[in-house]
Image (cartoon, chains in turn blue, yellow):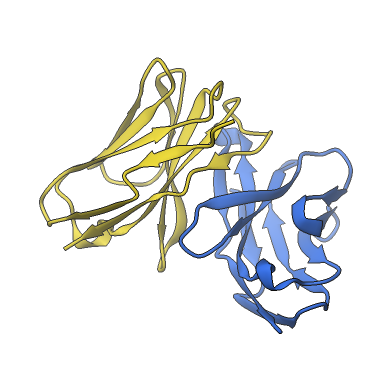
Length: 114
Length: 114
């Protein structure tokens, strides 16, 4: 069965410093992986997706993620945090054996201090 | 282009009642999925519809049901509401069944059962 583990439930950074949100996945075959962001009282917005093309994936708002098969990781990074990045971030794997249902990690809450 | 539209945004219902939530996908998208989000369980897959057929179902009791119309709009119904059904219900649409292009989420319907 496929699963994702987000290694930190909460990350706090200062504005202008780098962001690293960690995610490990478990999959018996080549997965489709996503990062979504959820701002308070809002739905989920797709940040980026990996679907077996380039291992370094660039997304919106300056975020990127690197797929590392040997480490089964898909960490999300951003060089410089902005106050508007404060939100909850979800690492997601698509279970292509079951019609593509999404399996969500438990989420990482990102706080950005001025 | 309009996003995924969910109605209503908020609902308060009494235990034992039933409720119907609506989701209009992005124009041209034929796959609609439903997810339940709670603080304790996180985001969990309910079911996915494609071309008016349920293609996949999560581990929820039979009180949770759904359908999809010929215009791809979808409804989900919860009968005999329980306090534990209080949650944010999110709908997601995708161009294709397995969602390898990514899913677009609506803002959700927040259901409170009292």
